[in-house]
Image (cartoon, rainbow, N blue to C red; front, top):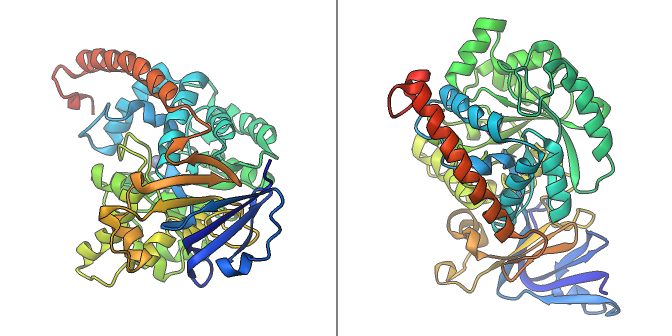
Length: 455
Ligand SMILES: [Zn+2]
């Protein structure tokens, strides 16, 4: 069995500190990590013993995409609740979640999400959902890199854990998954209006004790900001800062509605910003000021959010929209250059979720999380410059091969570690029951067809 893999002849997009692109480049992988990157000629003297050589000419070889924010289990509910403002939309979704979520169904949703993500060139994600052990087990089984961990939520959830028991419950979770090479711990209070201040403090302490990233939603809607100001006298971001929640690795999703003071606190804290343009557009939440974040040196990750709020886990679409949105809004074609946008889905994304030393770059010492993109396509010809191709043209079907932690998880578009047919069959069967329950709920509560009266 080969113990080393040499991928050779590709257009290598390294995402290293100089954003080096190597035409006719090669990457040597050994023991799950990247051993060496350079022009093919550098590898001429390489010992051929137990070496797998992959000819990748005609392909872009780049780091796997990092999905900065998602809820994998929500893949089970894709398209179920539509056309409502965030708060009533969440209420409706939670009715179905409470009814149907268990370890087994979350595992099913995670299998579905991981299969979708690998096929789209994503090699790692930051995931927040009920039963995070189901997500972690699915990731370990699929060989997928996942940041996840205990969630904090003050109301009764489908897992039956009381709010006051969550910190201790979380402690056990973090102990159980410590040492798993593909699982990176996160402690995840939902947001400031659904988690009491004392439990946000406990979440921070828990994260610090276990070297975990603190991951929460923050300033997603105007309503959330108004609610936080009314209840705590502070914006959500200032409230988190005040509680000490940003004293350590932190990653905050959305950050659409920030004050000048918030920007200052955010930049000073070093927390990562998780930008989910498709979700923010679809839910009518607003548009995050990404150029301002980048100008302040705030690490930004692009994310898909869950499949209920952006309806797929397609990072290429999220990349394209993230790159174009700011230009249209500000009427400035110089904003978010293609290279900067790709950085927000690779190296910059890894930085934003606390994995900058682990993934997101093809440099010696980083874990071998990489993808191949076939350039022999009508829509990718001619290929003058990889940056605009990657930012505006490449799509999921162009990703042919995916390696995570040095192991191929997709070759020639065939998934090797997760069975998509089984996930599809399971989700389809469960989907029938979810649809029937949702229809009955809407009929019982709305008095009308659209369910809006409950909000
Ligand atoms: Zn979210």
